Image 1 (tube, rainbow, N blue to C red):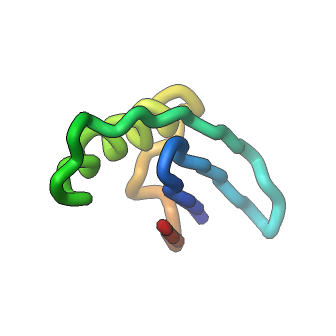
Image 2: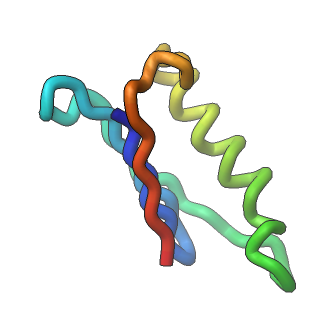
Length: 71
């Protein structure tokens, strides 16, 4: 399972297998200035998630579940 927790200045990512964390990362995020709509953050945050998955050698299609929260 991939867990994504997006905050105002960071994105926390974790990969779980069998109920255990196998990879975890907190990535700093600097939003583009000025942000008029939250959708403006989509591309840079998605790029961060993809880079994290590449760095740990996991393909997005391998997950049985993806959980995300923001706020």
